[in-house]
Length: 192
Ligand SMILES: [Zn+2]
Image (cartoon, rainbow, N blue to C red; front, side):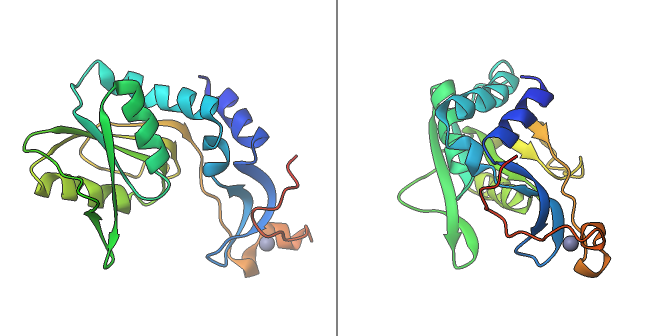
């Protein structure tokens, strides 16, 4: 899928909204971004995940797919479904990502790590360490959206379907405030 078409789908589903938004961090942004809004539709989830699957399936014999909870789970599930392998997830336990629910990793199993949105990449990095510690072999990282502007270094092949720069402003230096554009709370339904 072309990047332009992917962006259009993100805008149409409200996953990417343009305006003047107050983020939970307190910063202002001309964009509101919520990947779950687009991934709720099976046809888009399937199509975006196909991009990840096609990138890795020729290269590696993947044994299973893993994601950090919460956003990545839906991606790992669909990628695992398309690859015909199982998917599991890591979730926080006392602040650390851990395998719960009886999930486990066999020695030398080849593992693809999936995420919905990469920003700092810290959760994915934590999952890579978790897999290695359990004796697994991470083969790559697949994400729907990369917001890191190419800053991430996992020492693994990385593929993302779209790349969307994260733009934020300090409230006292916000050009949108200067233009007196009304500030909206994220999640509002005024999709253009
Ligand atoms: Zn502002």
